[in-house]
Amino acid sequence: MSLFGKAWRISGTHRLATYLIALWKLTRHPEAPRGAKWLAWGVLAYALSPIDLIPDFIPFLGQLDDIILIPLGVTLVVKLVPKPVWEVCLSDAEAHAERLPNLWWGALLIALVWALMLGLVVWLAVHFLFSGF
Image 1 (tube, rainbow, N blue to C red):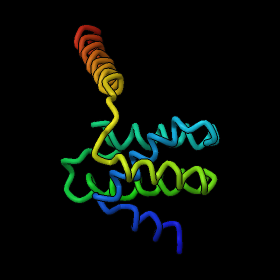
Image 2: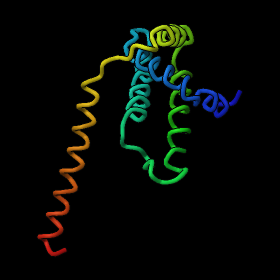
Image 3: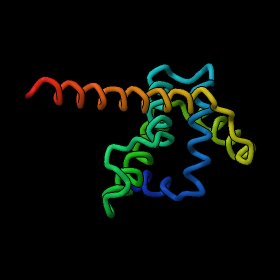
């Protein structure tokens, strides 16, 4: 099966949540390669962040990036991890799918990024308003 076919199969929403939990468990697994852990963190950050590459209010394209990028990221992480390690993480995620990890620090990080972006916008607005271009 092609890489796109595997990503499309992963993109089912009920299954995608399980894969994201498995990625979370993979980031904490001691036998997972470091590069795969970093990529898993990136996929999780993109999947859970309210900041998208293409904003969701744009018809069709806003959802298309989530439908394509997240499953492709999960597929790439799965390819980088040894099969036994991924199977352990996936089976653990399936067994504990109803109990999500408490990620208060993730919410704090996203709020900090939004605050920094707002601060940058305010600074640019004040700078250009008072500098006279």
